[in-house]
Length: 299
Image 1 (tube, rainbow, N blue to C red):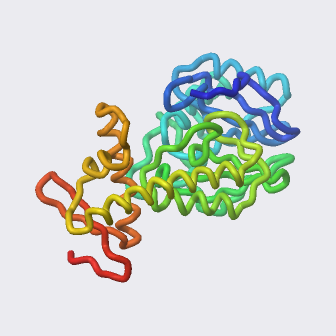
Image 2 (tube, rainbow, N blue to C red; image 1 turned 60 degrees about the horizontal axis):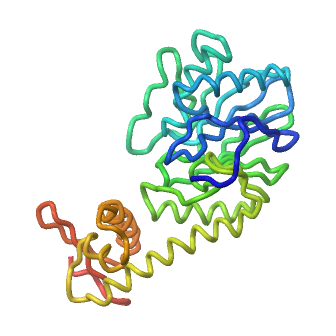
């Protein structure tokens, strides 16, 4: 759980206002951070929070009224419901239109699955890596950062060297991911952008991005090293993810073994792509063996 208090509404810079989604939970911390970006009469909203949280809608509406502005378009960092779920309600209760046909709802298209419907009359505008979004006082650049999901993007506000990281980098804690191989490459992409500040979708502002992201990378590399060490110590055997958990996660209660095994499996998937391990499937059982350095898979 977060240890830094996040106000419901906060002006973070002359161009950025954060509006908290008011949807606290184990995965969302104090809630989903949404951001209103720009300085003019129409501005960009990054993410929309979750469906069914009227306090968020009220706070967003008040911000727009107090700043005499409106929503130009909505950018969604990825398809998870705590980021896209508020779209239809924002259209109805905040923008006060029957549908969002006149408002662009932009995101990257999913690679392996169909994007979930946003509701009747609400359609996506799919954009590509590198797309720029322009509003008064701000230009945002989309950067494809898969791993957490296959459609994840971050948004760079170059004029402030500010990066909106969605769920790729959080303000506190570590991120979950679907593909660790892609996720680690996305962390390198974020480092290459060299942001001065990170505005995450959950948790507080990150004012030391390089140290923070390197901490993510170090944590994953340490876990990977433990997994490889375990496999090398059992080089003549195939081990299941649960076998590895029992060696790596010493002292962890058994009721957490299944979750730990899922995490180990994601690491093993990355190592498989890097040709450092091989996999054997025997019915429902999946087991893994290290490939010696300079060696070749037997499969």
